Length: 137
Image (cartoon, rainbow, N blue to C red; front, side, top):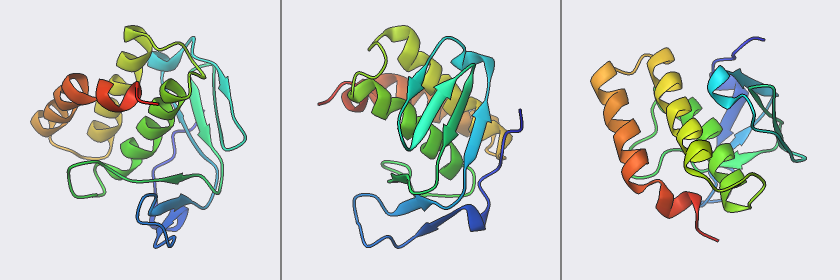
């Protein structure tokens, strides 16, 4: 399984929506064992066998509370998919499932060149405040 980087041609901003300014242009996948056991099927994304696949046309809002950068935009895409699953109750709203998506953020930000300390801060902020988003209706 290949983990794709989010290249400039894979998404674009300016979707005429302030709420969801980014849109996926080609299928993107990310695999990691932290996602094993989570299974979801949606017309714009799927999670199966440790792999998140996001289809063209999926919109997301980037990072909340900080400026979008090359180091945080890809994590924000896959993390948003995970939190959407929790919000819509597509998967069990559990500590384990939310932790998996928060860990994913830490893994991806490190892969995308974020400094280890900054990546750790993102993770702790998600752990402290992410529940406000993951469990809202």
